[in-house]
Image (tube, rainbow, N blue to C red):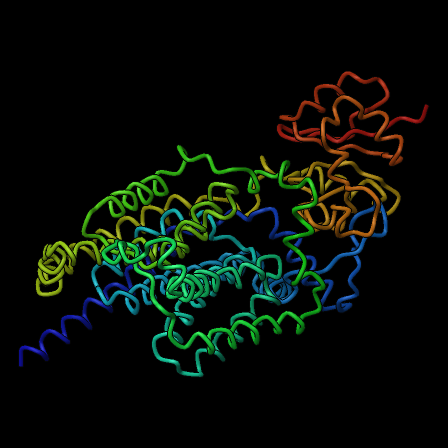
Length: 505
């Protein structure tokens, strides 16, 4: 009877956890659309109507090549938008974020078996991850990377062939929804393969004698042979072949090509992480340090490889922080529980038993989650899908009503180019950064280069590109300069944006 009661309590706690995470994800999702979402919708429309021709149709600068790296996601979002408008896109993000949050919860639950910690970590992690809950293809690929790690772990432990199939399916989906991150899929195999290689090398008698490895039998770093490594390799190879089954031509080369360009110096998400602005990151690193300096803590080499690799990636580029939150936190949690188990601390078990056996605690936890989620939902309820302070809503209406867009050569900023092409206005540049790098577009120069310090030589560059109109936000330095230039007249102006026409000399 006691066993039945315990199982029943766990089921109730799990149901509570699922509903709490769902409410959290709903409350934490922003309504405001991100700039990439606009071109995603437009590209989806173009694909549905005309197919994929691997050419760009929206920049007037030149006839550029485009690889459609997330074509499937583009199509899905366009179809949703076409039927349900902006609210449909917003709801799709909520659904994807809920899936993401539940993936975090269940992967934690499966990998360390602690109900309370799985729920607690999933709930806490959803808060910083909410900044990535936007209508971009990452909302699809991120939970799939987490499921990949889980599938590799299960393949090693069970040897069941179905996990090879899962790995192939996950790879295929990422290749067609977010090809720009596809190679990272194989980076996640490396810690497991790396530990196996180190183990094999360490078992060599000459190596053990030269480096006196027998002295380190009681080391806190555990090196073991990876079971079923042959199946892991099969899963890796078959997953790698999935990159063929996509119209994108960049699956195998994107990372190397983008590193050759200069976008990493110009885009905020490519810049190094500002640690002080990320308290959750700081807390996780401090916790990791405490675990590692504890004499009784043990860590597998593959875990050390995984955490350190993700940590370095996050420090190098802000865009990689989400991988550390998604996967790195999983391994830090596993280490924390192992450390507590090694020192004989039963506090987590006591806390867990207190929660699952006390119905009053159920109610309190649920009310707190509902209250916090409801408060955040209320804060987001007044948000507009398109912020007039961020996007030239008024200027776009003016252009489409009063100007012949097919004859314009409009210079615009990177941040709102996507909104322009969304409204059928040809652009100088938009947030498809790879399109404007010479490594991708078939040109002998990067359009990004023309943005660097443009305020110093804008006349020369505008003449080279035969610019006829200039759309600027009033926070830019170039706005202040052109405002005083007698060769430009103001066609439209509001509180945030201004449209100039270049006068014929």
